Length: 388
Image 1 (cartoon, rainbow, N blue to C red):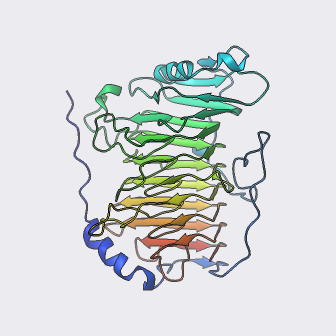
Image 2 (tube, rainbow, N blue to C red):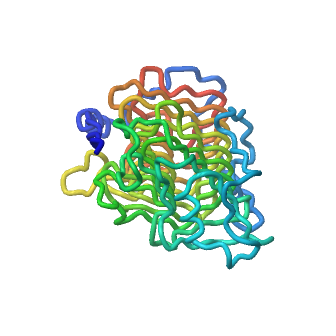
Image 3 (cartoon, helix red, strand yellow):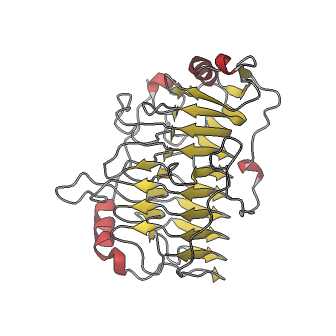
């Protein structure tokens, strides 16, 4: 039996307690390049355009950042599995679970119209199977029914087969979700007997890689309180250091009534995980916990990072061609909460628009909606607007 690695050590109480105390008056950490960037008050942005099913479309329509090859969609024209035989009724939760269990590329044949598959159990990746690709073709929605997490990958879960003595840092498997909508996922109370499995209402990933392309996340939720859990839509915990979690051309929320909510990280949450977010949209997501991290005396903790929450030591965040607006945090970072405990992490914001993101109690001075503790000179802002 391979030994389970310990959870990461944490210098957070020293750094973050000080940061929260002075968060609202910290001078901006943006000592790096600031080419054409502003921090002003701006008018409200336009809502995301609707897609064929009437919900917000995938991605930020004004985003035009180049997408590297590693972040692009995976070819799915010769799938290993096809869910459905041409009718909506043939597309079932059991079929999705079976396909994910076997690994490989899965597409859907559910008829001409958009279809929603309500999951009756969570689809779990096995670590000794081929890399998983789920391609919904732009017409498939997977729903957690408000009762369960939708997708799960954990290289340190022995029930999913341990394949490495260093399960927390291994590079495989790779999970790709593309052209798919994930709604009404809920991770509350679903730890599977493991102490670190919190958050990730739609998707939870520990170890290996995750890529999300041209997908949408609506009304997902996770535990409502707690100091370091998060990710109503996606939780990434100690993923591969060989590549960041890629999020490309995707939408989290997109309009009132579609947002995701969790104690921390209404959209994404990472613990020791890097994110590269390209041409994506985050709106109306909420961090609803209270008491911050570490939790203030007499509180359950949480409430930071309305759109994205990241914590740990050495990790990075890159936003390009991305819009964030109308996200909220009860505590800090209405849009972004980023704490690199050893002050080595980097953050870049390029050709992006962040506005009307509300931080309830603290944010970094001069960066509305953002709380950041990172390497010197961070964040690096380029041709971006950050405003109240």
